[in-house]
Amino acid sequence: MGESEATENTNKYIQKGNPSKLMPKINRCCRASLISNTNRLKRFIIAGATSFFICAGTAQAADVYYVTENGGGFGFAGKYSDISKLYPLAEKSVALPEFRSDLLNHVQQTNPSGYDLKINTLSNNADSYAKSIVLDMVLDGETVSIERYDVDGTPVYKLDILLHAEAIFFDYAKKTILTTVPISEEYIGTVDHHPSMSDEQEAVNQALFENPGNNLVERFAASISTADLPKGIIKFAQVTKVTIAPRAQASITNHPEMGWSNRQMSNNAVANEFSSAVDSIAGIPLEPYAIDSATGQMAVAFSNTSAYSFTLPTPSYHIHITVDGFKNVPYQSSVAGYSQIYGAFVHIKVVDPLLNDVYMDAAFKNGVVKIIPKTQVTVATGPAYQAALRGLFIKLAKALNGSNGKWVASASSTPGIKRMLSNTNNALESCKQ
Image 1 (tube, one colour):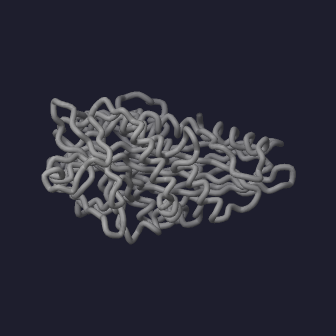
Image 2 (cartoon, rainbow, N blue to C red; image 1 turned 120 degrees about the vertical axis):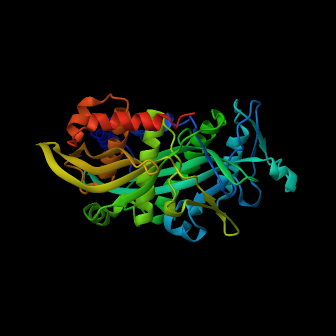
Image 3 (spheres, helix red, strand yellow; image 1 turned 180 degrees about the vertical axis):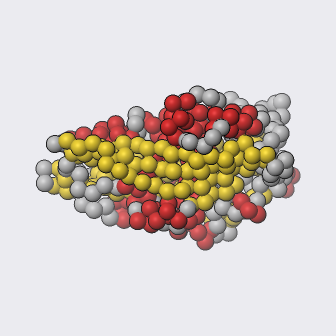
């Protein structure tokens, strides 16, 4: 489903629905397809880490432990002091006893075929930890956007929540990250007043664990059910640098509905979208983006007394993403409303710093059409920009193997772009197990 179709369906839904309460989730297939294809694990080994993942692969089924004691089982990406800034709503949701109970219940109902899952059976004995593989869910993204419509003279507000997380396996004793898989969930609801903090909190609760059949906890359970433990990998690729150019930053600042209230959130969101697209569409695993990638550190906080800093291995291939800007222009108009094209402009560079090889150094653009009916009073431009950026990464991932040529021709005027795509694909393919 394109952005214009998704928007049109949302508009129809709002007109038919009861705006007096939060409404059920509206699926956006472009997002759902990306999510549903991510139940294959990324495979890599992260040396020198501190707590999180699975031990080295073996020929026999390994034991994997899910431990909820002492705040285990769920964590936040980043420093503990930054949790309130990065995840202001989710921080409150995960403190609910109902969330912890629901998460544990879903994990207990899984039946992984690639490993033996042990729940709350790992003792604090040093010998036990020396042989342990641990599984956790780590949240690394929270965005909120709001749009206003008028339905028969009555204001209706659309509330859009997007959560992003990772299922993480780690070898506790060796301090090595072995595997992760990205998961996302989007929840859309409506209210007849400007959403309060209570409304936003309820919507995050729905996206996280309360909305049956469509919540992040169920995504997590589904992803670990189909997981296979890695048997080792030779090379690694990672988004090591994200830059928000001044023109792009101006758009982000002018459109707070994007939910990117600080540079750290912006960089995380861009890297997560790119990594998810490349992994789910092209099947190429990437190491998780680390806020302190310059120092090779990835922080994860479980509580104020339980936080870890993981040392990531030096990737063979570095991916640098620069978001150059966003733009919207009029497209069509009619008696029912009008439409706008929202565009994202990005520069991507893929290099092997050791050999000084440059596989890609190219600029890309992508646009989505958003239909805006006369009944819509305000337009949340930020989410449309995010949809354009997300679509760019998905289309680029599809183009790596030589397909999607029509889009490439319109998206990039960089000389030799087809050769760059082929060279990049060949390099990143070496990261597959």
